[in-house]
Length: 399
Image (cartoon, rainbow, N blue to C red; front, side, top):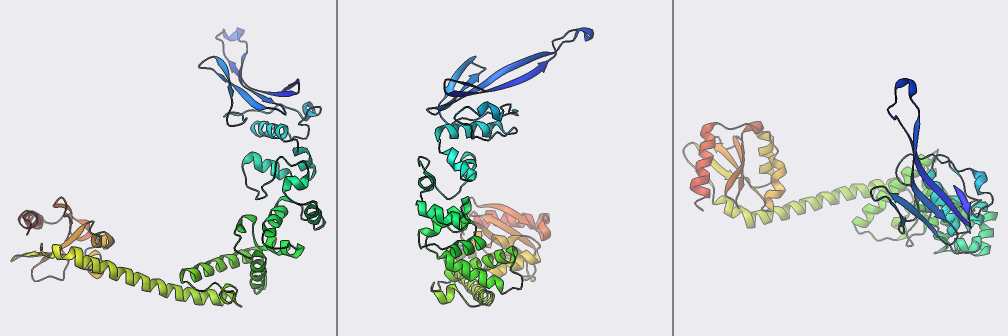
């Protein structure tokens, strides 16, 4: 690193050792140094030059900011080297040269970094460099702390007096201020219950909700952070079920006196509601199957003196066949009722209730996709020949 004409230059280089082939008693170290990047930092511009070895030239990288390319680079810059420069307030991390270069560019571009760090808000700097959210949305052109944070000087003083002038406290204060006049007790209870990323909705009174959840957690003898978190999860599940069942979102339902009892009651009702929906959905699918697809499949029913073949008719039929023939045909029900496949079963005459062979038929190509006996075994040659004859004589003849 060197400093010339109000510009700081960071040089990124690789050093390597090579054996030059001398005799053992004449071996000498031969060290090679390759320059990879030159990063130029000034108040007016932050850019870098990258050496292209395949073209043997330097080019200026104009997009993407400054960074140090892939590889393990040791940071040799010392704090003392920056004392008389415009980035003297920058931190030096010996183990992270890439971060140092990015922080240098940020410090040069925004002189406000100096008072941001002095204010104890250095986390905003690192979050911007690492692209982590702070939910503060600062004004990087602000000339004072208040303008930088988009707060009034009175707000800044208030947070300092409350001992909440930190990144999280500022973020909570700005979010809550959008919907109410914020008191110290509001910040305290909301910070206790929620993380800042959990209070982004402007349609919720998070002060009231935090107070409610804190009260519910205290119904346990030891409201530890784990208990508070479980209470939040229970409340979220409770509200999800209420909305799904289209309950009115009034205070009576949103803030029940005893959350656990209300949650258990609603969960029981919700499960019953889901069962009814599933039954209705199955009935709808079955009706469609019976009206649209099953009539054409019944036309392919065939019986002789040895075997019969027929389509599976309903969910119970599919389940029984899967259980008795030890296969996964039950999982084919949804595809069958939607007309995406067709499933038939072969039975011996006189043993119509005993599973023998399961057949999957592709009606579009009029071909057998699967034909298996119990446990997905290959059926006897006689049965397989009988199924092939059925395919040729009945299915392909379009009966």
